[in-house]
Image (tube, rainbow, N blue to C red; front, side, top):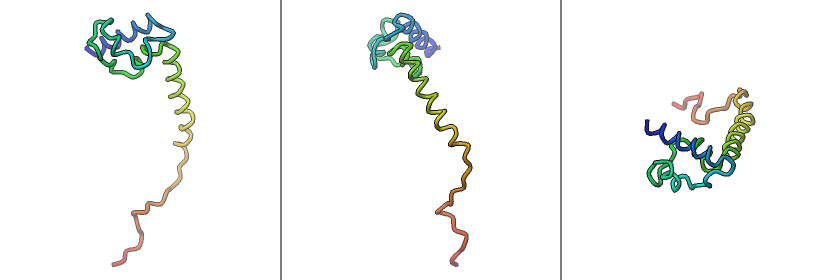
Length: 93
């Protein structure tokens, strides 16, 4: 239940400052305004980034991850065999 309180505080902060947030790496200093201890992390990257950078920053983070998945996804479809250098077929007994 503690994490949900942190998440709600981040969401409230995002609603209070939707465009610019509280500033990068400033959530820990602003947390007491939302009834959390000084220096407390949000325990979720997504909501902490949203609280610190606002909705535009959260959108940029989402786009970054989304573009990475789109670019790297096709690489998972290629099925190529790679020789294992630790495995030999002939034994020198």
